Length: 94
Picture 1 (tube, rainbow, N blue to C red):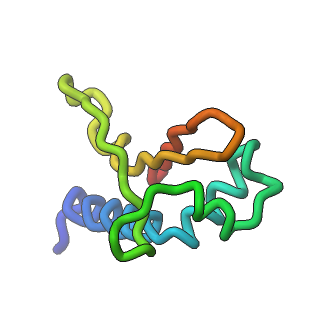
Picture 2 (cartoon, rainbow, N blue to C red):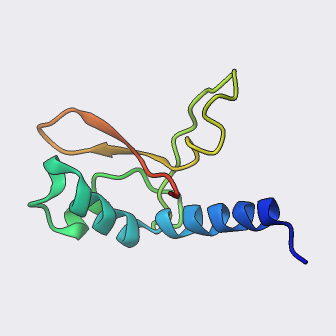
Picture 3 (cartoon, helix red, strand yellow):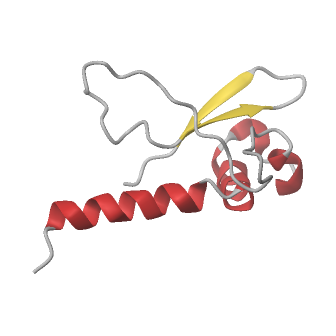
């Protein structure tokens, strides 16, 4: 029988991998970030920091020395909309 905690770790990894795809993340951002609701998803992609492959969004590493937010800060992305301030977007597998 599979350990429930072990399967949660796999689910979290799969969730993170899906979100790091620029098209999936831009659609999610458009649906829940007020500043981006009127933007085309491709324009949102241009506001994200991408890895060298051009498809994967860079994850922002945040310090959590106490471990209080373990697993909650795994999916943090920087969104820079021209003419607006930088937004750190956090998605958690709920």
